[in-house]
Length: 155
Image (cartoon, rainbow, N blue to C red):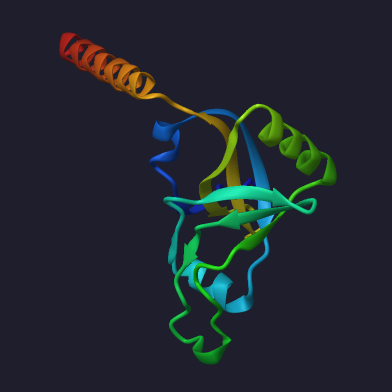
């Protein structure tokens, strides 16, 4: 049986610009029924989303999942903090890295995996300085110019 690809719901485009991503983790997310239905309508936003570790649990903050259109009283607060599902060993290593090395845990993507479960791709990253952002932008521009020149030459 061929493996289906993931269906992207929301992507944090600024995260890779603001942070140097060192490691990525895939985590499940605890949602209510109306939140899942809303996510199926692609109604989620994670532009400022980040994670914290409190009491041996990982929590996702600043994620906005719009209220379900037919949810009525069953809709929950769209900006509530949501629990993430990771293995105990992963949580312990993340907690140690976040505490000691001054790293941040940011949400990069929310998507449906091949079993139609909602997953969050987390990135463990270090904040970039302004000159790092400029250097990345310059490198991307140079690469784009090189590709354009190669394409023109091959015609």
